[in-house]
Amino acid sequence: MTSPITWQHDADYERARIGRVFNYRRPSRYPIAVVEASEESHVDEAVRLAIQKQCQISIRSGGHSWAVWSVRDDAVLLDLGKFKEIELDEKTGIVKVSPSVTGRELNDVLQKKGVMFAGGHCPDVGLGGFLLQGGMGWNCKNWGWACEQIVAMDVVTATAQRLCCSENQNSELLWAARGAGPGFPAVVTRFHLQTRPAYTCMRSSAYTYAKKDFKKAMNWILSISASFDPDTEVAAVGAFTPESAEPYTTILFVTFKNSEEEALAALKPAEDSHPPGAVASFFFKETSISNEYIDQGAANPNGYRYRVDNAYINDDADVVDVLEDAFTTLPTRKSFSLWLSMAPGSRRRLRDMALSMQSDHYFATYVMYEDAADDSVASNWVQSIMKKVEKHSEGAYLGDADFQCRKTRFWGNEQGRRLMDLRRKWDPNGRICGYLDAGDGSRVNGLPNKHEWKL
Ligand SMILES: Cc1cc2nc3c(=O)[nH]c(=O)nc-3n(C[C@H](O)[C@H](O)[C@H](O)COP(=O)(O)OP(=O)(O)OC[C@H]3O[C@@H](n4cnc5c(N)ncnc54)[C@H](O)[C@@H]3O)c2cc1C
Image 1 (cartoon, rainbow, N blue to C red):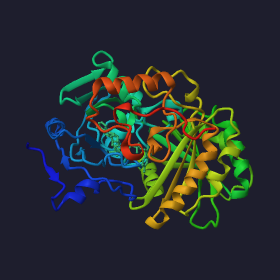
Image 2 (cartoon, rainbow, N blue to C red; image 1 turned 180 degrees about the horizontal axis):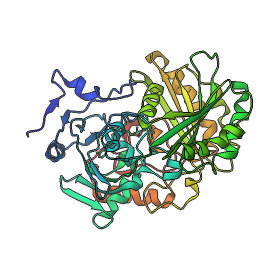
Image 3 (cartoon, rainbow, N blue to C red; image 1 turned 90 degrees about the vertical axis):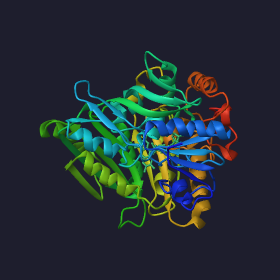
Image 4 (tube, rainbow, N blue to C red; image 1 turned 120 degrees about the vertical axis):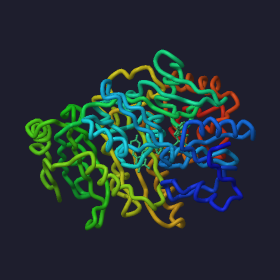
């Protein structure tokens, strides 16, 4: 074996086990060894090692899954953090990229070539976990899911076989990769992604309302978001501001255009129609992908413990009522709740792929704190919010989920069944760690794809 390997008894084991894990709510789970791959052949070797040791293999790309899915008991942990490749074909606009590359690393390279990839909002999320979950990237409501831009991928299977997957070969693995999340039954070593032309004029606006005006702010944005400009992302965030004694609600717009005239035309309807009484606002502020990464990075800082959950709210629900507590009763000053407008994209027929759950309203809550003693406060608050929200939800997004705390629907019924069948076909022995539920018992069976709490 030529790949760097750290065993459980080695001095460096703790760094290798959790050094690249984003969530400081670190798990008490212990792999037998960590393989830090820096080239594709190391991936083959890691899979062979797991076969030889008759244990499972878990995978880490960017280390940002909230529930730390990469760290599993008694498995070989394959860490792809040192395996970095970005290769753009300027003629086709297709970029070949290894899964540990982050959205910021990719766009730093692409921007110089006049193209972009609508990856995750936070700079340091790995493309591996992000794309496999579907990928709620920039302006997802209009441009679609990031996984729809995977034109092909290279994988190493559970039996250590290298395969290329596209619409023409091994297409069922491509179908699964677009939405299987941490239950994908192979290791992806390279994505081939279709980029889009970069935008030369990005502008943003924001309107912040006091807690008493939560309903006013939400009713306004709900009334205009679905038909808003097609190159503009629209979100609402409930959070404390540095000065506020209570959580405020901020309605945010980020537009991607190629001229000031277009950007102004996009953002003017919000400026003209926003309700009076905003405690703070800005209009038509110059921004860029790099600036947005800085802001998003600041909103999700390193070094904190996070407890996160999410739901797609039913289109016919009273969204304002369903989300009021989540936005206005946040348990810590750093926590925030998010409503992301998904319409009109959520109303189009999705292509045939595992990802099959969406509604007009995406909701997620991110509880952030420093002290392990607050774990139960954070957990209880999230549970109480989700108990109410789930009654009005279609299901949830894998990217902000933790199946150890709550299982729900993540796919349409037919897609969920097909995905679990494909997992059994491609990895009948459950070599590759799957969905980490309570006690890690689901293994080859996968998830039931049912609301656990809904009455
Ligand atoms: C601060 C922050 C911001 C976020 N913002 C967004 C956002 O804007 N949009 C969005 O959609 N999501 C977002 N997420 C969620 C994020 O996409 C998921 O947490 C995702 O799992 C992170 O990917 P990763 O590779 O960094 O994670 P990892 O923890 O490295 O991977 C997660 C799991 O995915 C599987 N996996 C990863 N790589 C491979 C591979 N090469 N082959 C096979 N399986 C693999 C494994 O099961 C692995 O354990 C955010 C998360 C954080 C922490």
